[in-house]
Amino acid sequence: MLSEAGFIRVAWDRIAHTVLFAANYSPAEPSYYLGHFWSLAVEEHFYLAWPLAFFLLPRQRLRIAIAVAFATVVWRIVAWKFHLTTEDTARFFGRTDIQLDAIAFGVVLALLLAKERWRARIDAFVMARHAWVIVLLACVACVTVRAGWKSEFSLSAANRLLLPLLIYGTVRSPNWALSRLLELAPLRFVGRISFSLYLWQQLFLVAARSETGAGALSHLQTFPFNIAAAFGCAVLSYYLVERPCIRWGHHLARPRRKDVLTAPMHVPT
Image (tube, rainbow, N blue to C red; front, side):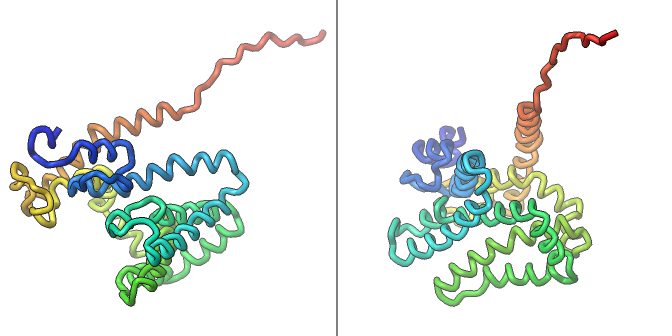
């Protein structure tokens, strides 16, 4: 609607591909305002594929998750080195087959935690003193060290392996300083509306005005109005759209109780 009203400029084929969760493979004209939907497409592709694998091969799901995670790491390196797919860097790093390990490593951790032996080992580590500092510093190092594309790709994979552990640690070890920080009311609120905030922020947080071609929204794309507008839209979206949809989803997922009519029991005399 904003595009039709002239507030922003977005091609219709780009909108269609975004709605169909194909934004990260779309050949349509790029749009700054829809650029962030590549990550949502990755998530949706996972949500469609993983339950099928979970259902068809329930006893192999841990092996599948491990294979997918490491196969993605290897494929990303090979595809980049030999230019097997695309020369477009932005499109390359947005594709599901390039980014799937970011989710798969989390799945691996979740499946390991379901096994008592592995859960005990992981808990022993995350509950160790200063464990969160070690993992956090390792994650920071993985995204800041620059020593050629080979090391960057390797460190990126290591970071995706460590992040689920860091997230789990904040839940399992509430005494961590990082855990206490994340439990602060303002940060909890931001976390609650984070999905809506992610959807709306691109409309207002503009890095380069030349990329957006916006005119009517220019005032709302200027600090501090852009921050207020992003949070305002996110809050409205969360309470008016997201929460009702969550309640609806819970209602649909609720198990249906079937009234079973049983004949009176005959008690022998």
